[in-house]
Image (cartoon, rainbow, N blue to C red):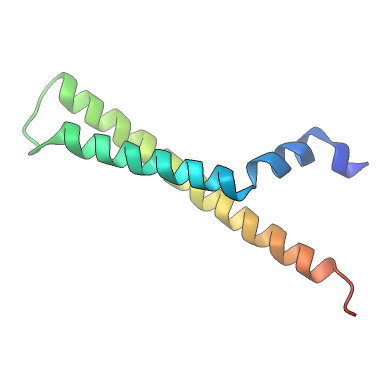
Length: 86
């Protein structure tokens, strides 16, 4: 019954390798946009705001990526330990 819970289904969908790869690609793109928008660092106004927002989103995505990667490692370790030894 626990496998049919909404949280279990959400975890199955989120903790896939494809999701982690997509998150890595998004983080790289956000990092590049933040650096390109920042330029030499002497911009003001819109370019500075774009740079700051995209860098903040990059940091949030990076933290989420680390948390999900740890969750995948823990989940795979628990699965490996729960399988009966033959």
